[in-house]
Image 1 (cartoon, rainbow, N blue to C red):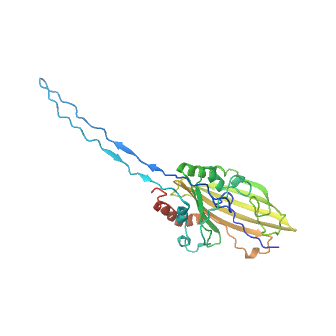
Image 2: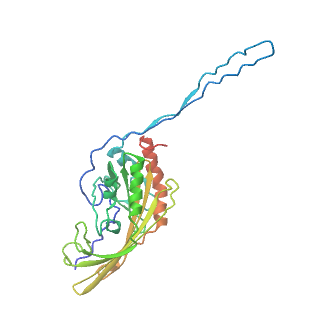
Image 3: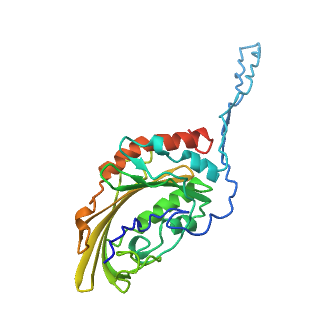
Length: 312
């Protein structure tokens, strides 16, 4: 029996070029946003004063109209290069968090269905595409001190409203709670690669999925949401029972025209495999995800601001 290969596939949280490959982002469109305001003070005229038998007209004083124009901030058009610069690099990580290295990814793979998107619906890339995403970029994967896998990526939109609509769509798709379905063994979209290679190629996995949503408490993004997706995989192959449990946590947060997504993935409780004793088991927590993002978020937002992509 070939050892199990852990698949870090986070349902519904795949990266725009991310989720395992796919077409490049659509043609970039300019999305400059201009903020301006003006106020003009009206002229003031003193009323005339009239005395008995003598009419004296007081001099008329006209104040010069004062026009105050608020400073105008024009945000530049987002580019893939700008997203690359904004994403965290190895030196931006907290101590003990280790980057896989390499360049950020722009692989965008919109898809939907069981084993792909939350509650069997569209994955993150498709939800972003449905709201007119312009581009996407994901940092290389990172290994946490306890062995969990950390990922962070950015979706760029043409407007704040489109970015918010993607957050709203993600929240709206989390209402299924607990559900059960089946996936065939394999590495294609909509399959579960529980064994790797050709071992157990005919296996059918029973998948028990439990999804919860809440507020992660991100001060910089009050409308952010937090998803907790716990998935149990069970099958019987060659007279042996196999199983494991994956946990994928994610924070979706809007910053102007951008949606910043971070996730922490871990696996535990494997049985039936020949190498279970050697597998590092991890169960990620919101505390750990919030902790690493508290360190990384200011770096990403600061770079977006320095590039003129995000208003101060």
